[in-house]
Image 1 (cartoon, rainbow over the protein chains, first blue to last red):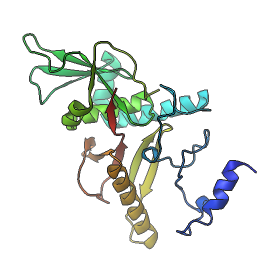
Image 2 (image 1 turned 120 degrees about the horizontal axis):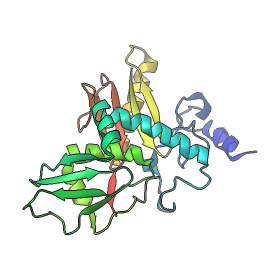
Image 3 (image 1 turned 45 degrees about the vertical axis):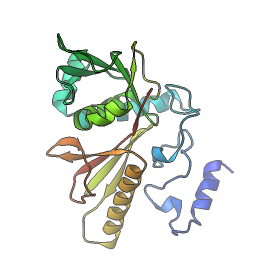
Image 4 (image 1 turned 90 degrees about the vertical axis):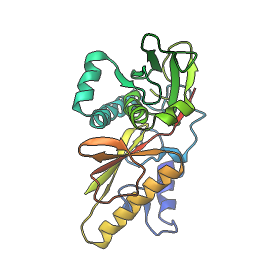
Length: 176
Length: 77
């Protein structure tokens, strides 16, 4: 018997009476087995600390990564809208002016730290010019890029609160 | 008909709800609302599509909305 068989069987006796296989989006108490992409995964329910950097899980195949990145592109485009999407394709980054720090611009690059740019004569708010900000669970980098754009644009205080300023640039650890 | 886009390592997955006046549709609305509340209480942000644009949203679940997205919590380092 496979693990998924037992998971389904046990799901049939859940207290809510809903058999796992009878619902379009059953939930799990643990992340779905790799390759089991039909089940809804609610990533905030799980701990991801054990994962190596820039990975999505042990056993994730190249095909899984490719499929995830394709889906991510679709949603990132939808989230940003066509104008920003085109600008990202043209420039390779998106710039957002800070609402908290006059003369400061955040430069967002896919899969990399935020670069903090300052206008001439403006003191930078941080000692270092790269802000390391990761999602708390693994995401394709394009998907997280679009989410980070929303944070910087709509919730800059949260970005300021969590940002870890770094003196150098490098890929984010929790995206792939 | 509305949907929640749940971003995860699969790229994303979708939870739909229906606004037709049936018991089944009401259950889908309750389930969508429950997922958004759970995500928020776990520290996630939520965006709502308004006039074609996604904006971070702090309001109550709106069954008339076209689309929500669950946005991962962020951490430094």
